[in-house]
Image 1 (cartoon, helix red, strand yellow):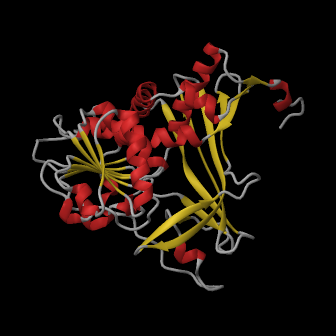
Image 2 (tube, rainbow, N blue to C red; image 1 turned 60 degrees about the vertical axis):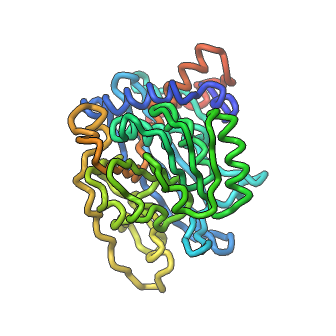
Length: 366
């Protein structure tokens, strides 16, 4: 059984091989050769003031690769008001001021565990690559200006990912924190070798942009509806960054998955399944209170990414269309695909540490 760390994964993982691995997974999904267990989040009160404990998990299996992946996170989360927007933060409260996220990879032939590794580097890139695959099918071929909202972990993966599928010649980035966006500019210009401009107002990031990306920790609208114009492609890492009014401005919409949000299980509400990305109404409800359930979004019948990658749905109908990809929720098959790819690369190059597989097997019938 192989153990890898994030530094080793980063040495093996590229935009190019991630595009290949994830495209193959979506094609398998379109052909019925992949299975995905939708994400669930379990909430408990936290001893950290103002935070809640969340255990998140999802799984995916690929028939051709013969692997199954379990991705899990053990987090303390808080929501905060920041410059008129609500933001979501994960507190690094594990020993050493760190976070906990793991991927467990299993053989679908023998059932044995193949590898365990942290999810951070893979998590970052699999989101950006999915958005980039959608942009490859939905953005205009001559798209050259990227407008970016966010200057953090996810935003940093979206720049090289979008540059891999379109000939981007300029990036315009907005983040509420000036120091953060300026350091982001320096980092990205070194990485992609094109001009990256920090702007002081969000509308400046959208000005003349062919592709708009929201990759922030905000859970309220980031891209305004008036910024959507003919021919543009816009996307997000969660649908609340766009909001209903902005999404309705699109002529064509695609989504990542039909399950629009995680199923949440919250202490005090028994086994009730609550579909929401951020179930704040339930977490803040008075004892015995029961908030109204959120209605499914209007875009739920839009084609999924697998339908577009698999050729069952069209990505763009004309240069004038405004297109939108809602990267609304993660899929377990993403971790199976990228995890299996990284595992194969690590085995081929002799990277990682081996521990006895027998430690994780048992002679007692489970």
